[in-house]
Image 1 (spheres, rainbow, N blue to C red):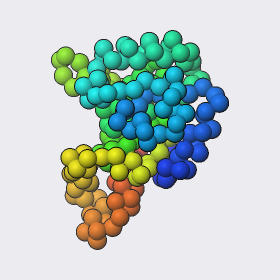
Image 2: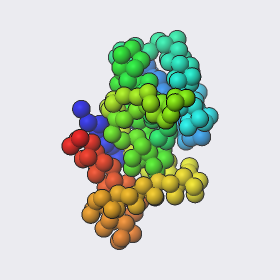
Image 3: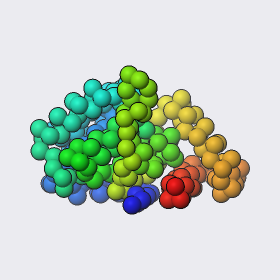
Image 4: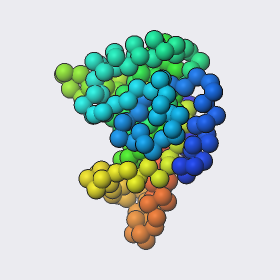
Length: 204
């Protein structure tokens, strides 16, 4: 089952998230975007915060987060929310794929690279001492909320990294190429890249 791609602004995203406030809420999130999430999420006892997602995308952190969710009562009908870039969605998706033999998950990518590639496609994994992404699975998120408002949290290096990925899409997709050539809004370009990537995933 492919994920639902939902293009949304931050205020509407907050409203979507608020629907889970009174129920069970479990999340994995990059600490860097903590102040850009609803206040009730910032203070939730069921959120595991990552300080260095790329450095923590390993089996040691996986084990710690696994125990954290189990101790907080996660069960088979729970949904795990993931907020962050590609490394965060890799770890969060791998957790969702393996905890209790698989639970639903929803991802909110917060970097440009994650919005056009890293959080799409359902490929999830963690690094091992033998190499990157050697323990993994295919586990599609139920929903992907694409909210361009999170781009304001990025430094120039992270923006350029995402733009490099967009350039790759411009060589693969005529639609993306035309949008880049015409200097269309980044929002339109992100949408075109995401649709192209999901089309590739569906064929695959």
